[in-house]
Length: 361
Image (tube, rainbow, N blue to C red; front, side):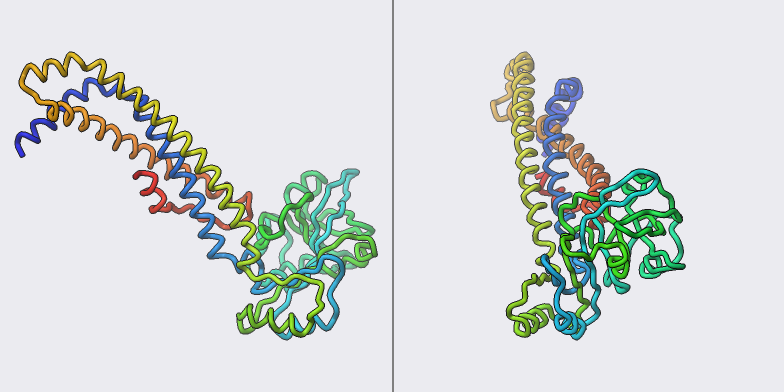
C-alpha cells in the first residue's frame, strides 16, 4: 500500500509541472461530455413533460376535430352527455388597425374554454375571466392577441382592432395558451375571440376554411369507452377523435427524431474530441522520453511506468468529465425555459441525473 501511495505521489508531482500541456485534452473531453449530456438531459425533460402534461397539452380528455364542416347537433349532444364540452373554430384571417395589418391564426372559443389549464395574459389586461374578456360589452366583442400581433398592429389594450367585418376591442395580450402545442404549424400569430363573434365578423360564410374542434372533460375519464360510444352512434362520422396521448404523439416523435439527430452530432464531436485528446496524450508521452529513461535507470519496470502515466491521464479525464457535467447543468437549466416558450410546454428547470451519469460514463 505504501508503495502504491508513493507511486501516486510521484505521478501527481510530475503532473503538476505538466498540467498546462493538457489543456486540449481537457477541453476536448469536457466539450464532448457537455454535448452528449445536454442533448440527453433536455430530451429527457421534454419527453417527461409531454408524458406528464398530455391532458393539459390537448386541453381535455378527448378531442373531436372536423376539417370540412361543423358537426351535427346530435353529435354535440352526444359529446355533452360525456362531460363538459369546449367548442372552438380555428381559421386564418387578417386583423387591421392604425393602417397596418397582421395575419392571425384565430381561434373562436366558447365560454368553457379552457377546460384544463389557464390562459396566461401579460400585465395590463382587462379584469375578468377569459369568457368575460371575449364577451360582448356595450355592443363590442373582445379579442386577445399575441404580443407579436399587437406589435405589428401597434395597438394597446383598450384599442379597437378590425377582424373581418367586425371591430373588436383588444382586452389583453397572450403570454401563453395551455393547448398551443397541439395546434400544429401556424402561419399567423395566435389570437382568441368569442365563438359568438364569428357570424357578425362574416367568418362563418361558405368558403372560409375552418377547423371545428370539440374538447371534452370526460365525466368518467375513460377515453376508450367514450370513443367507442361515439363511433357506434355515428359510424359514418367524418371527423377525428384523439386522446391526450395521441395528440402529443406527433410532438413526441419530433422530439425523438430531433434528439437522435443532435445526439449523433454530439457523438461526432466526441469522436473528433477523442482524436484531439489522443494526439495530446501522444505528444505528452513523446516529450516525457527523458523522464521515462530516468525512471528506467532507477529500476522502474514497464508496469510501473504505465501506471505513472495512466494515473495522470485518469485524473485529467476526471477533471474534464467534471467540467463537462458542470456545463451540462448550466446549459440544461438555461435551455429548458427557452425551449418551453418555443414549443408551448411547461419545462421546469430541473436536472436529469440519469442523463448526466450516462454522459459522464
